[in-house]
Length: 212
Image (cartoon, one colour):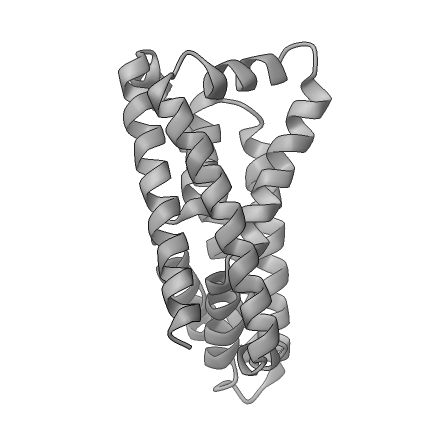
């Protein structure tokens, strides 16, 4: 069971570490110290749920459904483009829209701020079709090699633990980098990077759908 657990951990961490919109958003919230744990919790719960479904065999159905894959892809494109535009506006005016909204959200409207951050985290978690391929199809596919339920459960535990370590580590580690982000220029760089990541992922999604 130990080797199954270790493989689950390594496979999961190998897939999740790649920089993407979800990771960029968690990092940004961690750096600002704005609802970072709530955002990390949403991402972790979403990831763990999809991993569980993948190990149970649901991922294969999504991978084979062209209609469902297309719906997920185009929905992801719309959301990624919207958030990329928002990041570009924040990069142009770091003291304006982006930073001001987050600061206000943590003030008199803390509940609304938490809800908004959690909704964004949920969107990044579920509107990216590749997350289904990674967590459900790929991780689920690897898990079928184990014949016994004990080993398969070990693989599942390892994969879920990797997700937990990554998202909470990203959220808590981001706060340690907060002093680097006291200057507007640093926010310009981060928001520009996030916008580029969003646009590239959206472009890849569009390309994959048009080429399908």
